[in-house]
Length: 108
Image (tube, rainbow, N blue to C red; front, side):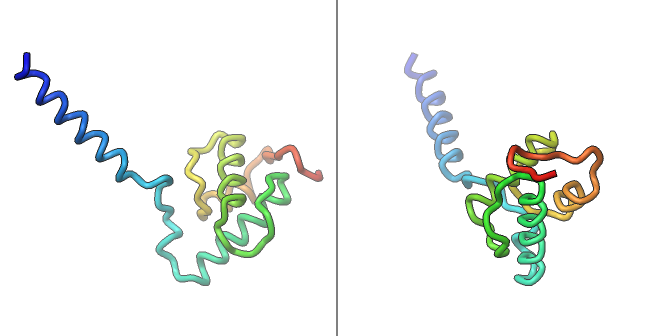
């Protein structure tokens, strides 16, 4: 019996260690862009999200918790993969998708 417990326990410890090393959120493709480009993506997303009724907070180009939460809410409402990242694909969807997706705070 001890011959089976030790490998199982070792596997559980290894899996737990791997989970602890996992970041709280996945890195976004925009994280590696030059500052000006990243600021433009985030500002554009904030502006469009606010216009669609998803409260992203002030348009300041900073990826804060309110902006990330608004992105995730929009992605869920639009049935997109939810990653909380301000990407070109997100901006395109916000600006060009039909029908438009609006949140509860939208002024249409």
